[in-house]
Image (tube, rainbow, N blue to C red; front, side):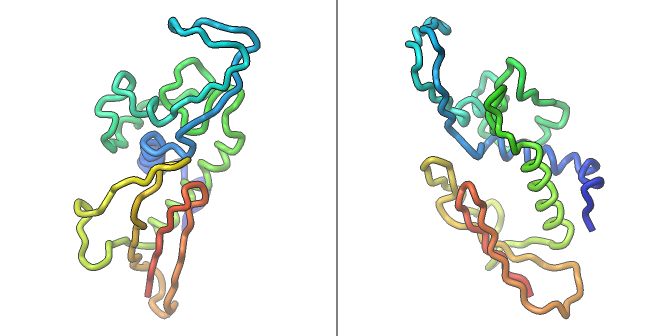
Length: 184
């Protein structure tokens, strides 16, 4: 059984989640109200009270900040701490400074706990002998980036086989990506 105290020991799980959020931030664009006065930033004149759009995806995949930015490489985060309130904004899946998502701590614990529980209680395989390298990873763009095709997984439960058939449909709330899970 997974307990909250045990989550601290799952350091690799945490870096996998961080890397996933870096590659696919929940809110790829942030909109902010501009300054009260016109300002000059990096040679650009920003008129007062302009709406400012921040492309979080571009920042999190900028080669000036990340080596091989489009590659999923969880170990890049293993020795790095992320300061969401400081001046370095290379990792901002939840925004930053005063406008940071207020649910960042709660959301992080829930995602870690849910993922740890699913991995603890089930082994996972792809249906019909599909190999991981053959998965269609094409993206569909909108206000958030989602998979073009739904991901289907088959869990193999570690529990009592007399449980019967379990059908779980997990809907990721923000991205509306459905993952259908069939177990028997």
